[in-house]
Amino acid sequence: MKIAIGADHGGFELKQKLVEHLRGKGFDVRDVGTDSTAAVDYPVFARRVADAVAAGQADRGIMIDGAGIGSSMVANKVPGVRAAMAYDVSSARNGREHNDANLLTLGAGLIGAALAAQIVDVFLGTDCTEARHQRRVAMINDTAGAATVAAGGIPMAGLSMAGLSDTDMARVLQKLEGLLGSQHAGGHQGYTRDVFHGGPCVGSCPDTARRFIELGAHRFTAGPDSPGRIPDELARYIDHTILKPDATPAMVDKVIAEAREFSFRSVCVNPCWVKRVADGLRGTRVLTCSVVGFPLGTSMPEIKGMEARKAIRDGAKEIDMVINVGRLKAGDDDFVLKDILAVTEACRDGGAVSKVILETALLTNEEKVRACELSKKARANFVKTSTGFASGGATAEDVALMASVVRGAGMEVKASGGIRSFDDARKMIEAGATRLGASASIAIVQEAQKSGGKS
Image 1 (tube, rainbow, N blue to C red):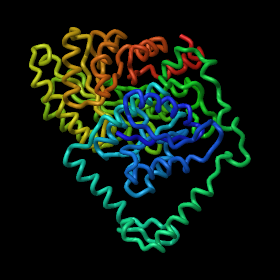
Image 2 (image 1 turned 90 degrees about the vertical axis):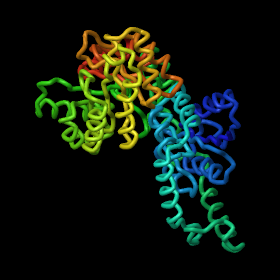
Image 3 (image 1 turned 120 degrees about the vertical axis):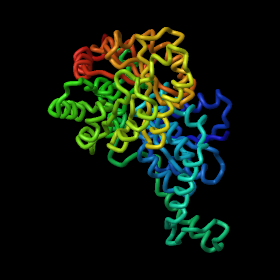
Image 4 (image 1 turned 45 degrees about the vertical axis):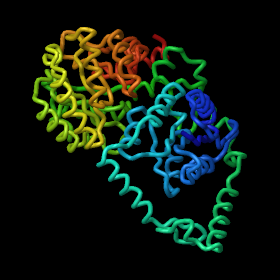
């Protein structure tokens, strides 16, 4: 597979690592620049990557800037390109499975080398195979074909390059040369490199904190795309949770306000609160998460599927479902697979992330492995340790075991249950968790802030 890869100054170092990573896996990599950390304009390089994909010179493209957003906008202006920004392996897989994305954009200020390599591997290793998704991709392509892209005043809608006259082609090329020629590599006028690279060096921060957020970066940017201080980003790994049976509207509203303030990854609630939470989080980057079959997991698969679909219609972007533990322990793997599939298929149809709760405190190691394998077969996005309602919660040992089973499939692990301190959270992340479920979210973040990331 031929890969075109590019970056601006903020993404240069990550690009170099990904080039090495990809070539080590045997990919034919074409590096279109930039070639240093000197300030440049990201649209130039995003356009180079997109043009390579559109022209068939590359099968897939990868573009890296500070946040990944601007480059995605640029690339999607090029006919034939379907660019998708990814910030974790789930979004990368979704972009391929659902949208047949042929160009990936990454934000070097949001993720680092370790996570970026996982995202790239999933992006390159996932195909769009289901008929309903292929039909929608065709609709995307038809929409792009119906648009008018002005190049020197020439309407391009519905035209192939072969349909242009020599005069028209000359005008198109002249316009493109003018666009590319107007970009320069000397940086943004009036700004110095310190504006873009003046943030704190990760080397001055504790190693445990670096591992905790799994950025794998050598430094953070300090510009508008900066992820901020390490303790701030720590919150993005936490699903802020209220699943108490006596939760009141006022309690739920308080959790919503806390999530908006601290910018947690999601708010996780029982189904009856999903619409309230989705409405309360509108306009923020905090997601709405609902549990299904919670906390016992003994509802019939059909009911779990209906519950998931209703939650998604109400605004849930993530679904945490509980497996039927008794059926798993009885060796009825066919039933458990059907149980999980009822929810993962609902999530795929609704564009939601699926997480499978194993309730590890009730399982043997062999049963945990079987549950993870069944979750892989059902194409879940995550496996999750616990509900928090059983005899025990997450352990680092269980997280490590689960990660060892599912990581190769591009799946992630959520640790939940009994995570009450920064030290608890750090241990889970170091064991392989990429998401945490906690009701003590604020205390964890505040402890990290006070300690400066030291455990």
